[in-house]
Length: 237
Image 1 (cartoon, helix red, strand yellow):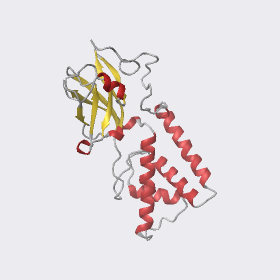
Image 2: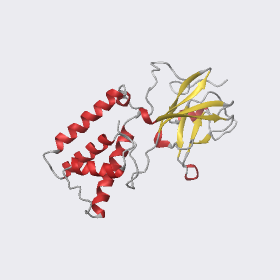
Image 3: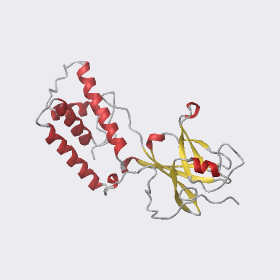
Image 4: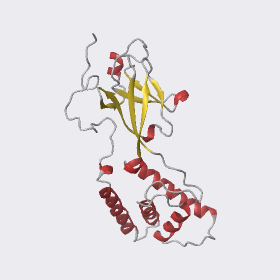
């Protein structure tokens, strides 16, 4: 996987792959348009797939009575793939989305309503806490929460900036779009090359990107196991 390739080289590759001149005398607007295609293509690929080489874990200490937490440094809502909570020495999945039924059981606005373990989470979209998440129910004891996330993309603006994803993949998909916009007969072939390269990368990484995390789905092999507060509402007391 060719990561860490400088923007200047990506621009040259894109010009050749899309049948454009590599003449550096072209104006700033010409360069800006190509940079935009590269930036957007890399961002779309980052969003649409789980990239094992960018995966990492962060552990958050959960405090009794506290429902809101800051994301760890370098992590935001878009980069989170899944959460898990340590229960009896085993990391168990924490579901995404806190529903009205859950809040009817344990109201987060009532600080006296507490339980364990943590079973659900959501992004805290309040303007005063735009990089926070909150958990349900409000915990009654300290716990360990693990955030599985994907490292965010680095900048791709200056010529010395480097790509975070595979350079060939970025260039081929960007070139295919440029050729399609120009209604070039070469567009389908270029797109096919991009797709073939994607399949090769998936194969090398054991197909992990072919099963991206789906919010709200069973991504952990839990089968038909019923989960309290999610598949059924336990009775108080």
